[in-house]
Length: 403
Ligand code: HSE
Image 1 (cartoon, protein in one colour):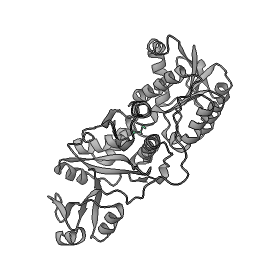
Image 2 (cartoon, rainbow, N blue to C red):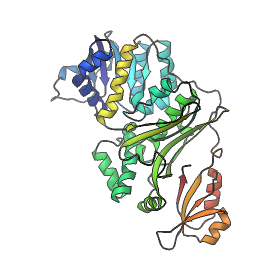
Image 3 (spheres, protein in one colour):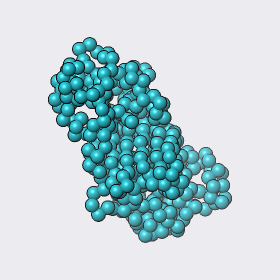
Image 4 (cartoon, rainbow, N blue to C red):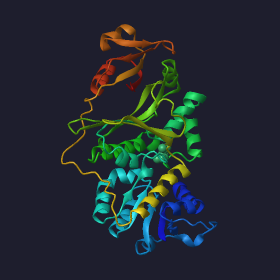
């Protein structure tokens, strides 16, 4: 019998509870017939109508000091007290599994190191891509590869919002309200729409791929709040869509280039057809080439599916660390922001002559709004794009175009 605890009974925590109850036989088969029994649910709130009220505790120490509990699922979210709880549990020789990308992206290096020292596991499959298997495939199945590039739609809320704008012509605000009503959005929607959630996720993937801690605060991050219905219409006219992309490239010199940015994506890219709350992560390895991971990136059961799989894995690997870790680099491993060029889609009220004077060769797009010009530049560094657009009159939009 493996006794486990859930910490945080929100959307994901209640999903983990449902899966442990509903799929008990199947889960037990996965661990050679051993039963997975839920012993505690930690939450500061009361759940008087819950069918198993005796499981609930408000005392973290009940879990920490219970020698029978070997695995805890931290699905509380936020940094504190999730960090203190996780650290204490790992130090006490218990494995912890989590969906908390903020915690993994911030304290992952330290927590993974403690797990390794204590011969237990800190698993975080649900922290990126919700229900999509991505952490384990990157760590195990793609381990023979040097990862060259990762481009991902990593945030379900923003993908849902952009999709509603594209397909239904909804405004940004209405689409955001829909996403919140459906439970996809973070408590604070800024984390989604400003790109912070996607930034933490690409930082985790980049750390895993490079074996070195990629600090999310070093990643240039832009959300989708400035993307308008007109931009979306322009993209459609160019046989493209706009998606929020978490992007990382890994140089042979060990440097990592990473950004989070809305990008114009041609309809022939596999990422262009990823709609609604779905996420997709396109990983390029030096041996395997391109592989794409696709599925529901948010929501109760998809996320709980990944958390529960980690519980099973932690039970299977009791007292055997899976040795997933990344090191803190001695200096910066981030490549400069100008080490990579993109083409840019630009809308401006300036005229074609000035545009050509500033940008040289560029591709004009039929304008949909009278009085403005729309065009796509040649590949430019971030600084070149900034300097040149600063010389234009009234820039309406500046968006990277994915190659
Ligand atoms: N708010 C996140 C999203 C939830 O929309 O993708 C999953 O991390």
